[in-house]
Amino acid sequence: MEEKTFLSLDDVRVTSARFIVPSQTFAMAGITSVKNSVEPPKRAYPIWCGIFGIVALIADVYLLGVLLLALAAVWWIGQKAQHHVVLATAGGEMTALSSKDKSYIASVVKALNDSIVARG
Image (cartoon, rainbow, N blue to C red; front, side):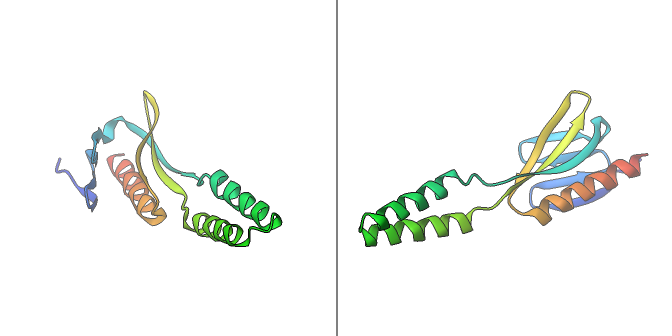
């Protein structure tokens, strides 16, 4: 049977027989299911930065307070969630690919699902 390609983006490839990521190759026959998961960004540091900015404003250190609040806002806005492709195999679940680009991960998951369905 000829190997059919479902997705080929950058260094990630999904075929009817293999799932190839930069650091590993998975046999599609060993994958029982696939899903995406989301890891929200860690917000503790921008929150602490904002708190220190408010404390500086209360203590009449306006320049430092404004700078810390601006830094906290930019830091908060700049953080993105991490999206993962999670594979279920006989050995358990494992994260195979991660990216901050949600649509990229969604397209990889769709291609993996299409490959699983095509093999029957």
